[in-house]
Image 1 (cartoon, rainbow, N blue to C red):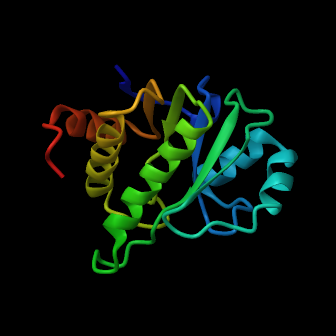
Image 2 (cartoon, rainbow, N blue to C red):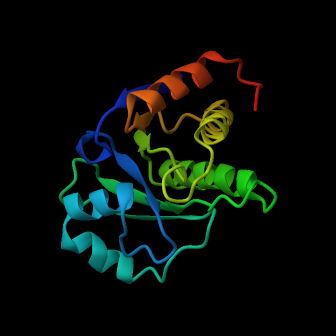
Length: 173
């Protein structure tokens, strides 16, 4: 039975098969989690990302992890928040689904997610957290892989948010 964990940590230090990068559509690095992952992985990550031709919002791409403890980086492009009337919820949900599909296809047993779109893309954190937990639970309900999903939180506030969302019943949005 797959498990879901929550940690407050630097995602670049986690010893998991794959970490998810909250990337921009160019996949060529940026600020926040994206910049931290690129810095920790080293220049080979950027070189591989240059070969991918970018990534549309709601989709995901897989690369090597290079100097990271993780074997893979799954880059996903979350939506920019525009008030919730431009399909933001569906696009964010797709980020989690596509990332998990790629992970399963590459036999990833453990994967760590940051809080996608909640930084400079301004997605409301509580709403994003509920979507993340719902999508992960739904995906894991009938699949053996990944065996472990980690929500990696930057702050104690994020950690509390995920703990609360996991405590809610699985059918709540």
